[in-house]
Image 1 (tube, helix red, strand yellow):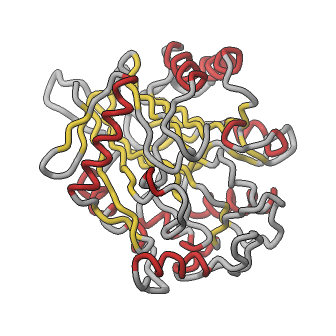
Image 2 (spheres, rainbow, N blue to C red):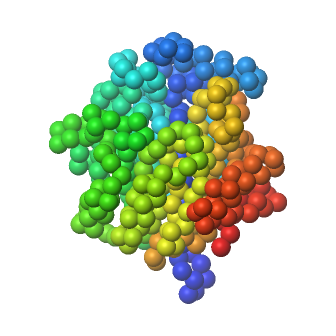
Length: 375
């Protein structure tokens, strides 16, 4: 927790990221890769994704250290020392050989869980459309692996109650409370929903006023202390496209209108989308991917999915309002995060300012290539 001078409100700095997909090709360059066999129409070995990336960017060493994929991101985390580090973990952590028949199945060997610890990740969001790629057995192994590694998680569990329970992360008088949900419009089906005695994800069947009310009522009656900041993390929407669906905005507004939610942490889009500050609270509609193995795959290059942002919001510990927001541009190359150059940082600034016109937000690109929210 950041302590200011006397009479200056106390604040909490977070590190938030969208999808961190350390499975498949990324897993293959880590110290203990899983069996590379996969069941896709495109390729049958996860190692092929490494070769595709190498054809684009040049040779990639292997095996690499757990720190390698975080690259320059580690220096940012060390410099800023956020109070809580929260990502959407877009892969099962399992050695299961029984994939769900969905065409694309991500997994990382549990022996490579150190890649999360290397960045000091405090909380993994598990409510997403890849968490049961290797069935309920794969989910159970994921939960066990994260627990053994001391990494908290939210949004999936052995039953409905544990899937709906928040993760509480951070230390001191103002830990961060994180609830997580997977929306049907991100590709998660009701068959993945956790039940009374069924492992699964914390599933949202629709982004309606009724569901928002049910969520806020659950938060209101939760026996845990009401702490700031309280984060609601949602996997929602399509992979590509800048549009913020009206139902997403209305749903996020209803959560914040409850007076309980301080940040809506949205993810699923493979690229950065616009964000909003509503009633003093931050809504991230699509954080974009931070780490993945999509390097060299063609088809949506205009969106610049190779560019990413590390989000560092600073939140008042008194009332949960946003005090400031800094965004650090990154470029994924050779399956590693690298500080983005000026042209790439400017591209991201232009995207956020173009999309921000509709959302009432604007950023400035500093000489240090960091984007900062303008008040």
